[in-house]
Amino acid sequence: MSEMTFPLPDVGEGLTEAEIVTWHVAPGDSVALNQVICEIETAKSLVELPSPFTGVVSELLVEVGQTVPVGEPILRVTIAGGADDATGEGADPGAAAGATGPVDTEETREAVADATASVAHENNAADAEGGAVLVGYGTGGAVQSRRRRGGEPPLRAAGAAASGPAGARGAGARGEGSAAAHAPIPVAEAAPVLAKPPIRKLAKDLGVDLAEVQGTGIAGEVLRDDVVRQASQASLFRNLSTPEPSGAREERIPLKGMRKQIAKAMVESAFEAPHVSVFTDVDATRTMEFVKRLKQSPDFAGVKVSPLLIFAKAMLWAIRRSPEVNSTFTDTEIIRHNFVNLGIAAATPRGLVVPNIKDAQDLSLIDLARAIEQLTITARDGRTQPSEMANGTMTITNIGVFGMDFGTPILNPGECGIMAMGTIREKPWVVDGEVRPRMVTTVGGSFDHRIVDGDVISRFVADVASVLEEPALLLD
Image (cartoon, rainbow, N blue to C red; front, top):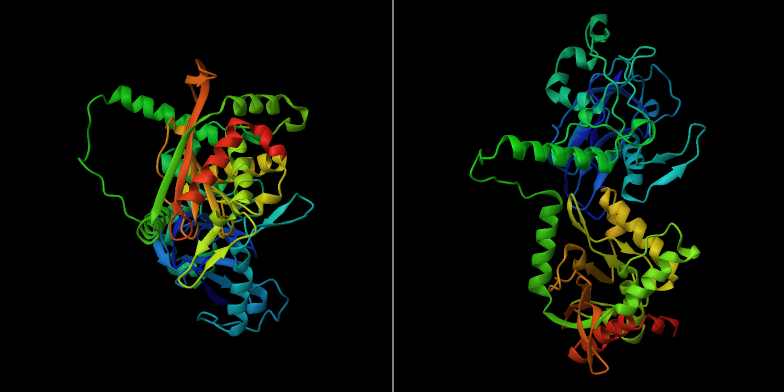
């Protein structure tokens, strides 16, 4: 027998710390290579960590909710054999017999690096007889425990987290001593709650007990709408039962995770890049008519179509006419990009994220619609990965969905421009000398004045506005 520790890996983008959100295993659980052991919240996304070992969990070294630096051990696993067994390779079963300390060799360190490297990249699907397995994102199966018997249900993740590190520090948890240390531990049987990790995170953020939620998905899976509905009902009950305010007069929220990263990025952008903002009112009546026709088109059946799609396409059209706005400023040069990684600012339960559509300039209108829809769903479910937010060249923010007419957005660091579109509402508008009701919005944005001057900015915003007024320009 030997023990190995699993240090918190850098899951990409040079992150330095992460918070343990949920443990998917408990002391005594058997884990397989690539099985999800926990969820962590980094400064940019929610990530599932796969196990780099095959063995039995002997100790959880970090509590749920604790923030730890990269490289700090978070888990201890007991291995029945040498390092090769830990990583699924055949090895002499007695090679490491009798070992009492952690195994720390070049081979095991490489095994940890290899097993966790996939977390820093996009998830790769592997075919299996029971269905697709997402390496680095989850096996889709319940945690297997050595305390499980026959038809008994697996231990729920919530129960695993509740056991905590404290319960793992006894001698029995490490497999030491007599056979009594390996005896089955009686646990109350409970039906497992079927819910994906982002849904579990949403439930935690909203204070919802998943055991009380009626799932409406396949096989009773709890969906996002189920959690939101439960949270709304609970909020209504609290309002009815406690009409008077109670509790503390103020609440102190630690600055960590995504909110900490947002604060740092916005301060950096606001004080390093000299912002200049330009905006104009637009008659978007023809855009609304165009959106209506697209929704009725068989080619766009099943695809979400909104004014945001036309706004995005208008920006891509305008960038071709004013490529200066698609640039990055450095201390020694201005880098003009001949591609557009178009960022879409998305409000999520975890805060603002800005994933981007790679090489958006090459997409047709329907492909752009699909890309925006997929980006939005992924962000809403909390599954946006760091690589999906990297290397953006220009950003859109749609404040109109919140009923706002307009605002002055702050640049995404490293980008020259960010465009905003306000709500589209019916207003009086002068057409051919007569006042008529038209669908009007306000568009504009903020730009880095170190890269572009007022004439370029104004021309670019005017081009975007002209497409919203007459979408037929996209045929040019």
